[in-house]
Image 1 (cartoon, rainbow, N blue to C red):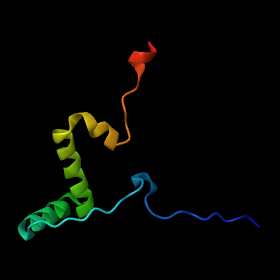
Image 2: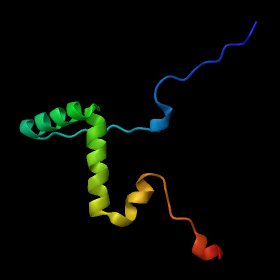
Image 3: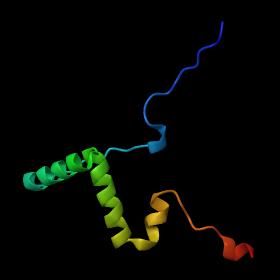
Image 4: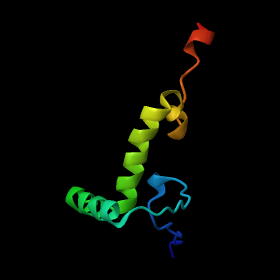
Length: 78
């Protein structure tokens, strides 16, 4: 009899998640909901993408750290 493995459910490629809640004007929320629906993505994914764009604009040197990517130390090695 073959041993059965416990499969992990969910989306492991998305990585760890932390809830951040906020409130915004109803009119803005409705526009965001419509945009998410038009793109075929969840509201969470839309807000995450918008935050990503904003973070690159306001803190350009720190965006790579947000995604877990840092510059390789090639200059120090060569």
